[in-house]
Length: 489
Image (cartoon, rainbow, N blue to C red; front, side):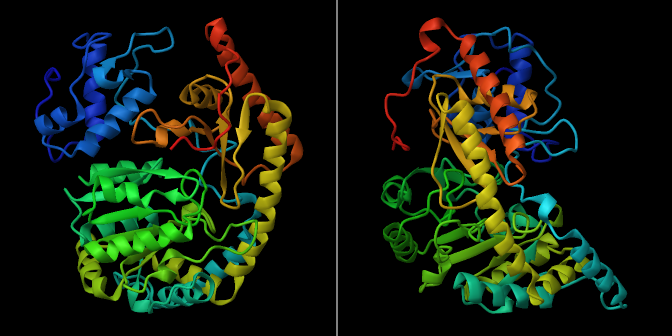
């Protein structure tokens, strides 16, 4: 059925297309144009009607489903869910987010944050002050669109020494974080309307961005060996791009196995495709040495390496970078000029000095030890207080953990109620493209600074889960999962 009064989306709409679709569905439901139980158009049909990519509609449907507004009924399609007491009519003028904080303070378990209390702020302030004193008329002008030359040289040197990635400074492009790097890659590779393999579950913000860019996402399942390359080939062998997190899969934390790394590179070479390696927190590995970068095995030069300082130093820095194949340097430089891909030289210069003087590697070594300890604090507290309710996945590295629910309660409901209790975890199912996704809770542990804090967090989470269990019919309150397998694929 067509959606009431939903014309072709304007190219200059104030919201991203998937949010505009979300908003219009909310308005149609709140105004009574769509009622509980009514079937909504299929993803394909609505995408054709609105002249947008299927991934854009899929993202909107995922948001509506995660909020309990839509309900998937398999072959019967997707319908408007019954209005429950908890789902009241609310304003739809604001952008929905997975875990948007109500104020500027940092909530416990927030994903993607390094240990901000352990960052060497005094050292950083001295380096910034020194850079300010070096300011001359040349540093006041616009920088190279590829980034500050000394920083690009420092990054190239670091990658060669610590990640096994051989590249020249001319191949490095500095941008404002990972999404900025992804913007540059999509423009240079002309990805609008093209197919891209995407890990399922996979990085939520990248999924939303790529869908908004009109990229056709091909969900490829992940198991204990990482991306199932053979399934990606079966679903879309001629995809132009694959976006992967080989060191610690986001969000499950598993590494891409050696066999699948070779298979992925062989596929890219055979079909002239490209691979973006998001090496977002590979330095934080607590058992053994950090895994070699996928790019270090790339003899055919098909991998675009993406790194970021947001999780290594602090997110407010907003610095990310790409190491691109030599054959793509000219195309990326043209796109960088078109996108005005420039960042403040002061922060780039400070970061370059931080790397050149060895502070970066010393900081990472310190953080590896600290994060190993803080992860153990939270894992032990969760086992003590919530061992009968959830199970923490074993992981060799990363700055987030996955806790699998052992009771039949919707993970999105737990995440929502936990946020009300001051805990900024996220639902694992919301990171899946295909429904139903795996159930679990994603937690950042890097800012859990003490055992009492970890115990307090675990007790609050225990209360949230048990309260939600009590809200369910009696026969469902203590239904444990039948299998202890970590993955269902």
